[in-house]
Length: 614
Image (cartoon, rainbow, N blue to C red; front, side, top):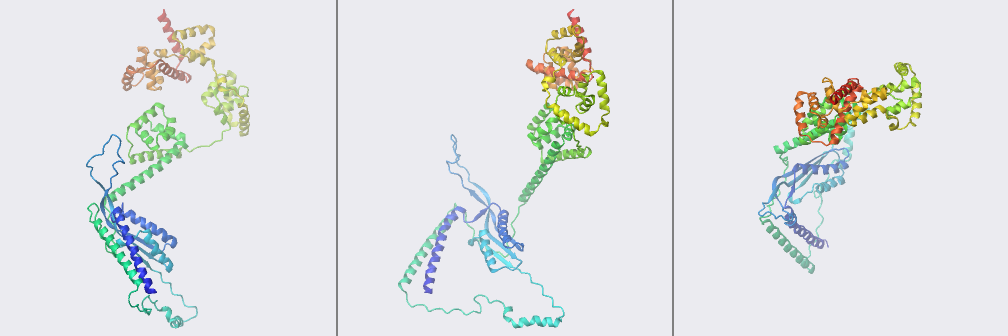
């Protein structure tokens, strides 16, 4: 019966071998008979990572050493071209005589995995390692791939002798168990050594019908095997398929993979680029945090770098257009920031080293300012005053006591305080000023109570458009938009109609045509503070004498550019009027600051017009 089983099992094994060999030609045709990878180092690290993950789960103490070696060489592999109809576009013909392309791959000739274990391993775990590792490393028998597993278990330290026992007695006690149990110290008998072989049953004499059937099947399988081997041999002889190198013999110590100098240089450059990018990201986050957390320090940085356009442009490159617009635009003139954005769009991105230098310098500036000017926190009981206009604040304290007026006026912008006090009687102005000077003597509880009462009262105030209307300012705006003849008539007739209103209007009234009457030393203060584009728009169509005087108010190196722009500029009437109103507003602002007397300029202009009319 056993002989019959062996005779049946042997043909079945041959059938399985023939099936495996039958699938070999298709695989060889697909992969060229060898395994190809992009990089030996990457493939080797991948094997080590997969095996180490399984060993770490099996040995949590990490008491193992793992090494994987991939042996092979680099080779050129042809790239299969796409089907003719796949990449063709309508109206374009495929190029005739296209040269075949190839790419560089690494051919794996042998894989060796070595594992050294530093602790006792159960036979089941050792069998698990020998079964799983070849699957993870994708071992192939035809290449001679192999797995070396060695167990190096540490020897336990000898037990110390018991207290009160002589050394000779301890040695005798240690020798006694060995003598009593000699079988435990003998090495285990290996399978097949020192054991009697089982008796072989006698072979039956002659061949039966079943034996002839088995022999026929064996002959048929041999015929199939010969056909398969012939097909493999013919496929290897085809010139289109690369020759398959025979597997290398197993090496005791496979050589390490060869690293080329250009590969090492490329890896160093990539590592340096990654390090620089991480440095840029870290510095960028610090600078953005400083700009948004302390807007006062961010304004100081922009003002300090305003004369250095390259630094600001590099900072925009680092921050990006969206973040830079939110962080820098509030501290820069709109025209200036637009020119910086155009510069950034036209020039190439600076190198990583330049970006790191700019970010490092900005970070040092913000850090130094933060140390020298620490942020101060103070509780303000009047935060609602920031939401009210000047007219609403004046209406809020109109009926309040003098001390409350002083408290509120000390908490708002000084310009608003001065404007509100100008509307008060002389006696009330003096009392409010004295109370403002003695505010340090007021108790804090009083300030809190006043703030609560005024906050409740401010909820019922009229809107800003209802209380901010100022008659003289509105009249000045109307007269500035009227014709020069109408404005001159209103100025002269108002002196007899309403003397007080006439004085207020003449202190604020200014027309663009008054510029020739302005003193030459005062004119630069007004026109240089306005954007050059706005000045050119305002001068379009003006009198030559007025144009000459405004251009002479600018530095000598800027005059040529202004004249050239003025000659080539063409603007519509609405743009010109809006630019002139901006220039007039600058003169009115200087008059409010007490730097220029508009009434004197207005009188000179009226006298000149009267003389010309007569």
